Structure formats: C-alpha cells, structure tokens
Image (cartoon, rainbow, N blue to C red; front, top):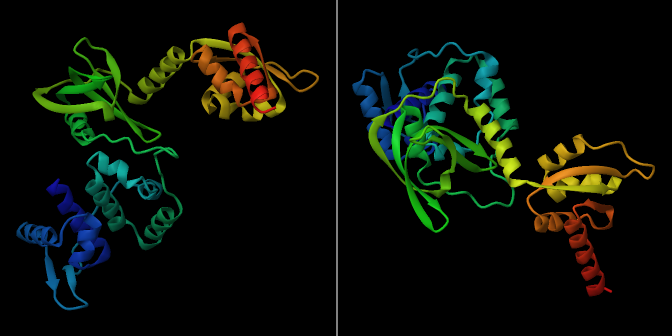
Length: 322
C-alpha cells in the first residue's frame, strides 16, 4: 500500500499547502518516521518538497506546483465526503486509498466547491453496523477483497458448525449488510454461493487467476439470493387477525421486511378496524414466540398449532401473574 500512501501524502500536502509531520502521520495512520521516509521517496521521484524547521515549520510543496485530477462533477466530488465508516474501509484495506481519493478531490476543486464538500462531511455520516450488535470480526476480509479485485482463485478454510471445510473458490464480490460482511464466491462446480466473512478461518492464494462470469451483476445476484433465503427461512404460513394497534407494532414482532410484505397484501379492515394477514414465519415455535408480544391484539386463524401455542402462553401468563 506504499504507492497509495505516497499519493495520499502528496495530495494532502497540495490541499493543505503544508503540514507538520505529526499532523500527516495522524491523518495517514502511520508513524512520523514513515512520513519522513515517504517525503524522501517523493523528493527522489522529483516532487519539489521541502521541510521548514521550527514551531511554525512543517513539510511543504514548492509554491505553484500541483497535480490535477479531472473528470468529476461537483456532486460526484462531494459524495466522496459523505462519511463512510472508517472501520468499513479499513476492513477492506482501503483506509489510505480513501484518504488519497478525498485529497485528490479537494486538490482540484475551486474554493466554493471545496467548502461544499466540507459542509457535506460535517452534516452526513454513514455508520454501517446495526444497533446493539458486537462487531462481526472478519480478519481475512482484506485478503479476500484484494483477491476479488485481482481475480485470484483462493483456497479457503470455512467454519461450518464445529468443523472447518476447505474449498477452492473464485471470489466475485463482497456485500456489507447491517455491519456483517458476506462474500459471493463461485465454487469449482460453477455455483455462486454466499459465505459469511467472519467464518473464513484462513485463505491461501492458489497462484491461479479466474475469469469473471459474463454478465454477473453483484447487486442483482444479492437481491435474488436474499429473496431465496427468505423463502427457505420462512416456510411456515400463518394467518392472523390484527387490531389497528397490532398493525402498528407488527414490524417489531416479525421484522420490518416481513411485516411490510405481509401488510402490503392484506385485505381491507373490518368494522372494528382489524385486518387479516398471511405471513411466512420460520416455524410454529418461532411464530408463537414472535406473536406473543402482540398480546390480545392478535388472533391466530391458522394453523391450529400456532393458535393453540399462543393460547397456552396466554393462559400461563394469566396464571403466573394473577
């Protein structure tokens, strides 16, 4: 990553028109000694850098010297400063690259657009992980991301239950969902499957390159994969009557996406405002557990096992709390 760091250093200096070694080391997340080594490397490459000692000194570019980056609109430039979580970029090994990209953009924008980019960074920030969830550690994520970019075939160790299985896989893409990284990887049989990055125990480069399948669209594949996953994970149809209050709390009971799909297909409310809804849930036991939180605001119409289960829970609660 040295080349990327050198570009980041150069363009940061171009934007700031000088900075101390300590300030640059903090921005690029390296040591002060590394900054001085990089300055020497840039000077050797012909970049007119000079250092000025003293409390007001620092590392500076020769006045008037600059590099240019063209081809970005103001909105495209500003979008780079929307605040993608640093942990996301660091996990992919792109922390320094992001610094370089932002420095390039700032270096080329006129003052009024540079101020606009700064205002966007002050007002918007993307934080990918979900609430109340511990980080999903994926120590081999950067290595897989590099292989995705370079189209290198990997020998992957993957934890499944108590066992570790090995597969030779072609990494096609990465997806971040609610703070969890998933990998789209093609098996030797040609199937593109989903792997959770945190369950990868080790990766080794096979020394082979692969060709990406023609027309493969990561976003479209992920949407299809998620729809198929939902069907597999929610095979139990449950028909219920919901009061107006239960409708407003249905997403908390069964999840926002499941609730939204079910309520979109429900019929009109009856005279008391209740509606009939059919929803797919994971199992009878889980259906009872999820619907319990709606209390007396839900009536199960089918299947009878869920209705009986909910009645048993209600009777037990009434007896316990009488």
